[in-house]
Length: 146
Length: 336
Image (cartoon, rainbow over all chains, first blue to last red; front, side):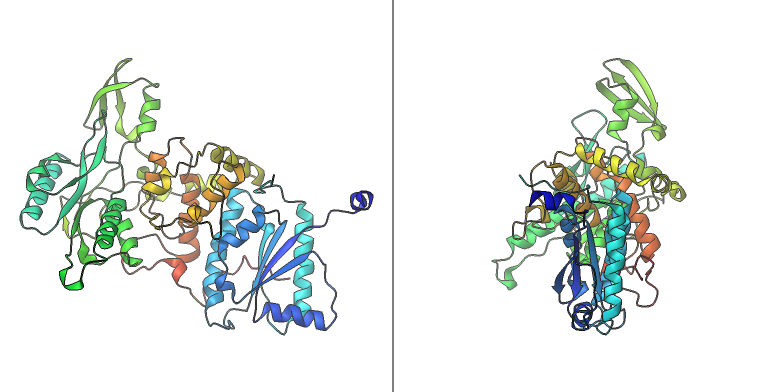
């Protein structure tokens, strides 16, 4: 077992926190249409991106995620009218501050994917995985569990 | 500021005599040389204790919030018809009024529960900077006279120019005069140098990313999690801070390096649109952590992304509580 694991190339662990009504439905559509995308992503479903506490992203990074993706409905299409608009401001500030402090900007990514964009969801995951893979394993902010 | 002190004492006496305020929060002469400490006066006779000078460091809005909350809690079990209303008077300079505006915008209390005595400000002394300027000697006594600080120290007599040891937040202060007040004592002070306020941030942004991370780690290694910054900050008023929550536990309480980094990062992130740059956190930090390098970036982002300066006016509501559907910046969104 150990030899098998040692030979494999490092694959990033990406946590995706997605909104139930658009992106999760889009991911579902990608699955039903049998569109292939990298298996590195672990999806967490929330009702709306407005519900996402910026702490989730920081905690994910602290727990060892190599990248975090937050994805929601396009502005103007939020199921709860304005959740993604409030989230947009929060995450603009968060991403800028993370980058300023020295955590690479590409470790926390944000996208809009709608429920009919199954193909685009696969493209987003491919793009995100490639970006995070290029950065290498995460070393900053990781808490070692003893 | 001599005649301002005299007028301030008269005004405080008048307010307490006319019962327009139940308590006035101001500054009095501190026990250590060259310090002024917050004081709470309730009788007209105590009004002569009040001082107003370049030694008045703390942002008093914190005490206003604490007192009003204590009073509200004490009234919880009292019948509505028996409840008493208290008015808290406060000696407020520019940054203090900004904090009060934030409290009012966040609906912590009503406008008529606080009586704001506005005073002009030309900055306060950075105690740590002064200690460095006298080479670490013990200051036995000192006075500020015409922009010069004259001291007797364990190392002989020394004189330092006030402008050389003014707190960093004061040098580039944009709002050194009260924005709202019930009464204004004296004339507005001349402007400081607000155009230079983001220079430090711009220099830091230009550094390579690994250098920025190294600096962040180095500063946060000094942090001993005493929470003095949180206690001193007027914007940090949550009854249960996220640090103390255990369901869920957002961040560990110990001194683990990454826990400290996450605590500081998130506490500073909570200040988007709420940090008034009063410098209280920096002045109370026992370890001298360079918090303003990061807080000023939060301030700059708030201005560039949301065109908002924390507490700059009653009409300018907190930026994270609203949105601009068509004009909010989207260039951080990844679009493959």
